[in-house]
Image (tube, rainbow, N blue to C red; front, side, top):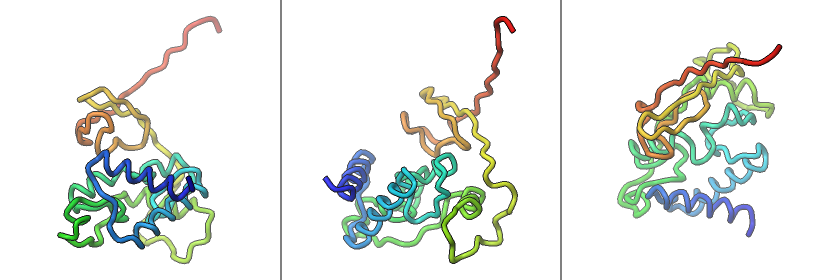
Length: 182
C-alpha cells in the first residue's frame, strides 16, 4: 500500500469512527491527503496541511490530524478548519463548504512563525507577541468524568475516552518527595 493510500485509509477510518465523512470534492481531498503525507514525511507526524507547523512535536500536538479543533469545528460549522472532515449534509451536497474561523489560539500560531526553519513569504501577523514562544508550559489534566489523564498545555476540547467537553477537565497539581539515603 502506498503512503498516500495509508493516509487516506487512516482518515477514512477516523471519519467513520466519529460519524463524519471526508470532503466530497476529489481534488480538494487529494490535496489535503497529499499535504498530510508530506507533513508526516517532513516532521514525522501528520500535522494539519492548512496550518503552519513548527516542526517540533511538543508545539504541534494540537494540530496533528485529526486536530484538537476538529470536533468543535464540525459541531459548530459542519466541517473542520481545512475541510477534510465534514458532516453528512455537506458530503451529500445539501450544504456547501465555507471558510470557517481559526480556532487555534494566536499564541500557538505565533510559535510556528518564530520556530519554523522554512522560509516564509508572509510575515507573522502583527497581533502575535514576539516574546519567548518556544517556552512550553505543560500541565497535567484530569477528566472528572472518566479519569483520563494527559500532560499538555491545555486540556483537549473533547475527552478522547468519554467524549466529555473541555470544561470537565481539571488541572492536577503533583508533588514529588524524594526518600532514601543521600
